[in-house]
Image 1 (tube, helix red, strand yellow):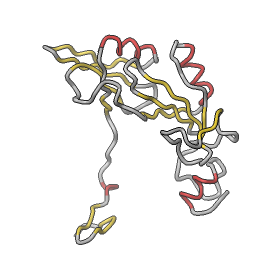
Image 2 (cartoon, rainbow, N blue to C red):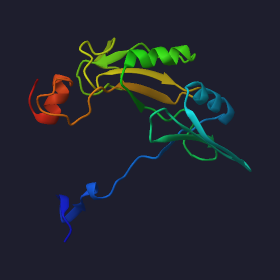
Image 3 (cartoon, rainbow, N blue to C red):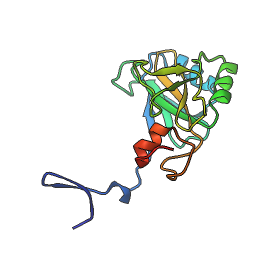
Image 4 (tube, rainbow, N blue to C red):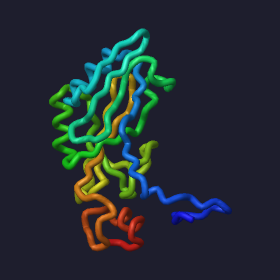
Length: 183
């Protein structure tokens, strides 16, 4: 029998690590593909394809440095335009990334962080203005939306988890969640 990662009841779940699963494309529902194309172009993202067919359109963009692309268009999703929320893009410097978006004419929030130190709350609970005071990894954010209201979040990551137990680049709460002890 193959190795199992977990057992739930009588079912052994296979180890997912045996097969790479890389996120390739995220489909973003939009109401006006041309308007959305202008917006995503203004972000400086690479236009990979713009295919037009009978009542069908696929426009694919790839953010700089990303291995995952974004598709917008017509008749490619049953989701309502603007319903994609919490789409995260990783940046190494939240302040510089925000400045870049502003220079491109994008309305972007002020930097914010979560006082819990793990992840921002969608209802705004525990959110503080400004980047994380110690600029800990995974702890600072800004947000913006496309013309339909699809919500994007930039998250500052300077060191990747799991890291090492003595790494001080993470918030105490994140350290506790990963290693079970405070820094």
